[in-house]
Length: 450
Image (cartoon, rainbow, N blue to C red; front, side, top):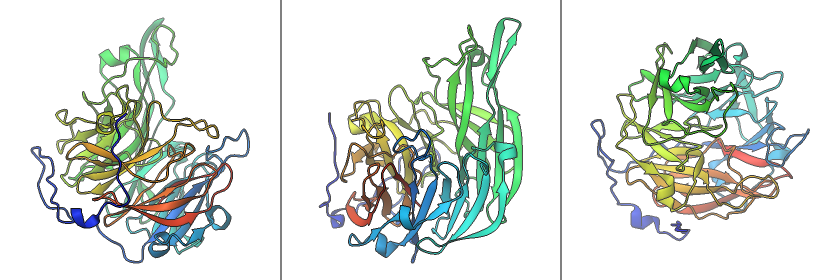
């Protein structure tokens, strides 16, 4: 198997004067490499997922979430050591909390996942260490989005969050003749500044008649992103299929092209389904962002459960899939059956990707496939595995957050139940700096940096 690996010793100076050309379409632009914003005095909030108590499996994250904030200077210092699980702040959530942070890291947003307070939105001012001061009102959106909502913060100056869900899809039949399967979609807009619900819309989202009669339907919505124009939301989908002969869920089927739902913004009305002919996987991600607006104004979106391995798809500024853009992670890394677990755009066409792949070693602790990191270039459609200490028990499927600060990408890496570190990856050169030590506990794992 061919792999290209970034080395720690790669010289940053060698790359500092390179100019990268952004791939062009009718709405692209070309320009020099520019450094993303740097926030002086920024906190790096480390999130840890606690193993569940009942029927617990190491790495399940079902025991809740603990957070601890560290200064950038300390996060970069390999001589520092932090015990997040012992000294951190418990975020309200029955299971792994769905966290987001402001772009400068000063504010943490949370929607509790599952349990009595499932669907409860809360906001905290980050004060260092275990100091997270709640601010604003608690808002429970469970009446609209259920107790286990999916949500994402828009990149609109930390003003808005969008929560989405689909009620359990229902089979519709005409006598004994199968007709379709549909659930009701709910899309909720959260005012993050004033801590209130600003919009809530519900509707069914049909596929084509030909697709529905075969049993295809939207099972889940997730990972909304606002387009460059600020007038459309693109929402990822997880597709399933009913067996028309039995009315039961069909686990093995030929997938349709990857789909997203486009709705007007800010009204959240007029849902339209768009379909890719490049990707054939889902576009919902899992617990993190799954689509980003690139510097060229196009949206880049990852696929999961793709029969041909994960792809990065492009949605142009007309809010349609650009099927001339083909980026296969399998091809870029020389692997097969890749699966993008989490990723984040880092500027200048570069992005960090957490992934696993077919044939990866399986942990005897968590029963999960080993995870890896790659730095990808959306313009050249290339990828290089990042050189960090890997371990069969490294598990990033539940990973939620990467911090981008200038050219620095902050990542928390620790195998399940084992100590690890913060690593800082240069998005332009791939250079890796070893940062502070993170002390772990049996069964727990680190689920992101914010």
